[in-house]
Length: 146
Image 1 (spheres, rainbow, N blue to C red):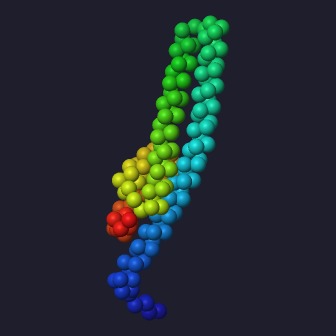
Image 2: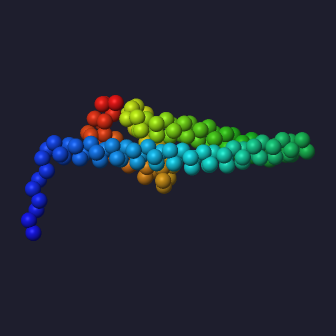
Image 3: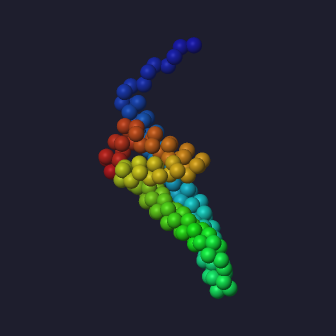
């Protein structure tokens, strides 16, 4: 069986551009989906934090030992930190989804991809794929055109 003739260079460049456009659109959609999932997770964390603050206030009114009070404060602080990090990550994902659709802010997209890698396993896959796509010359050219 004979191999087909090689594609002309212009067609290869055009094919790479089309591939980059398709992958950037897919990444934008996936970042929006991840932002939605993260929003649900943040609602759960906010609910746990509200319950913890309410429960701690009840226990302090009744009178609790210093060790129990310290454990409650530690839990509230940790949940607050988790909520703050989650909100920052959520905002980054929403901004990145917009930036990928508009083909702007390449540095923001790269930074968000690195932060997204911390969310194992889906975030890691999305972050690594984003970094791989954004390193390609065709994708960089799309960001420069916009």
